[in-house]
Amino acid sequence: MKKSRGRTGRKRRRKHLRSLCAVNCSHKLEYIKLKKWLKDRGFEDSNLRPAEFLGTGRGLMTTKALQAGDLIISLPEKCLLTTGTVLSSCLGEYIMKWKPPVSPLIALCTFLIAEKHIGEKSPWKPYIDVLPKTYTCPVCLEHDAVSLLPETLRMKAQEQRTMVHELYVSSKAFFSSLQPLFAESTETIFNYSALEWAWCTINTRTIYMKHSQRECFSLEPDVYALAPYLDLLNHSPNVQVKAAFNEQTRSYEIRTNSQCKRYEEVFICYGPHDNQRLLLEYGFVAMDNPHSSVYVSSDTLLKYFPPLDKQRNAKLSILRDHDFLENLTFGWDGPSWRLLTALKLLSLGADEFTCWRRTLLGDVISARNEQQTLNITAKICHFLIEETHHVLLQISQLKRSKENLKTHLALVEALRWENLKILQRSAEILCNLSMATT
Image 1 (cartoon, rainbow, N blue to C red):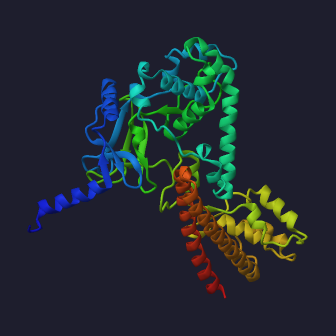
Image 2 (image 1 turned 60 degrees about the horizontal axis):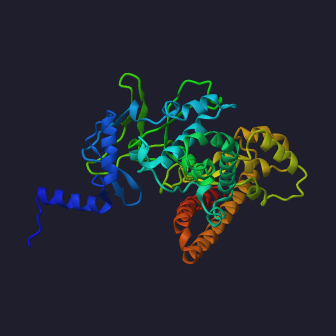
């Protein structure tokens, strides 16, 4: 058959290529029910379709081309799940009389767990049914996967796990007070796994929406709102949007500042986050993320400086007092100014130590100090490259032996590969800088 070379043929080929990257899911029963439920609450949308995308998974596809300034979505207030929703439910009277007051976060977690438990009787069932059953935030990752995270992220992951566990323990008495509402034991309904799921749902899917302070809640900010359907929009660091609650229309609206072709995935931006932040807060990694960084711990930093340096403790004290022992990074453009400044101060000779204030301001102290700083920075970079190669090998071996960890390990692997690319780029930059100064 002769190939079609005209406009119709080109359109057909483009549509075929897009179909390879996205599968329309709007015919699935759970999305049909969700759209009907939203329509009953005043939501009208004819341009966005739920779809499965290669690389990003579930998201929303546009059926018309979007231009900068176009409205992506406008979700009526009736569709939003807030603490106001919780207070108007059967949980409201229990929350209002509980002392000390529960936090807005716990109120929302409790509501999600309760609505999921009552199933068919829940007015929020169409939304609950499309929420993820599991999450990949560090709090949910298996120990073997967490142990392979970069050191700074591993510590934050442990802090997250501890925080969620403490939240559960401190809320058990409140959960018990809800027993009159349920035939089944509240210990069974509001168990740790249920709270972990609810916490991840709120942490990964809420939009920022400030609410007035209520006496029945603790003083923690009430800034959460779950936004059905809107929360299917995935993150891209390469787009810009304007998002806010419109007081006139009483709807939460998102407008794009970027173009999007017909039948392509519509993205929003959660903020200029690096991959460690994205993994910690949302449970995913964005490839080729321009905001990505590789963090250098203070322990790694100090490996390359002699412990017998008489001014070592004084230098560390200065760095600590001026907040130069954290957020030391390598990025796509090489070592950060903070990392180089910390290393310059640690590299000051005994006769240069009095110049430490000038060092923190970015002044050049001496050619020797500059060269030593570059040499040590390069050594740290190569150490991190070797460490990353070693971890990637460990991940590869674990993926073969532990089938149940494949999803978790793939996430850590993606982060480590991105880190490796950044470190290799930084090594090239440092090599060029070193050649230019010798």
